[in-house]
Length: 39
Image 1: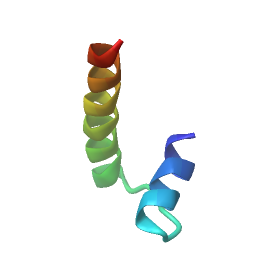
Image 2 (image 1 turned 180 degrees about the vertical axis):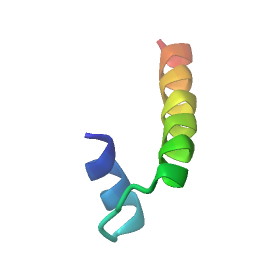
Image 3 (image 1 turned 90 degrees about the vertical axis):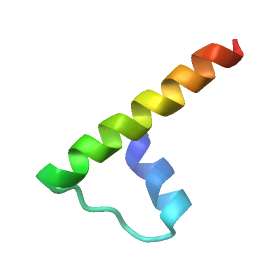
């Protein structure tokens, strides 16, 4: 689900490296907290 969202945003297939996984986790945490704040 997160990967398909990233593909839609970037428009390119997204491959996860060990380095990228942390950034995805941070971005996902930020998105989740902002969604929780809205509701």
